[in-house]
Length: 146
Image (cartoon, one colour):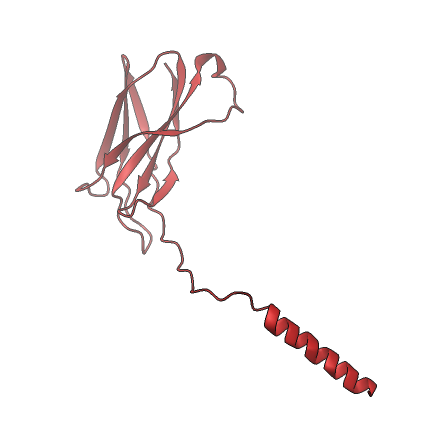
């Protein structure tokens, strides 16, 4: 076999291997994820006796394609007061309640209240979610010792 023909067969065999093996498995296209609802940007708190009240404003949908906010999940993490100074301690946020935003217009004030547990450093944050229950980014957290 001539050297030119051998090189051409080698190139053809390599191209065929890439064409057969390199394409991978074909699947239907995956749609892009829906935009998450906007985050809460103005979370504040008030403690009276043993009762906490969180307040925030319903955010506007903002970006194109975002659905309006359907509700909020309130999350809490607790650290024993003795560990309150630990800056590196991981926080395990758990949902403690939901607030429905049905009928609320952007800019409306929302409130969540609960009884506090004494002897702990409390951390709270809020996540908005849309009608399909897609959660947004968490708000900035509020923290205090009770």
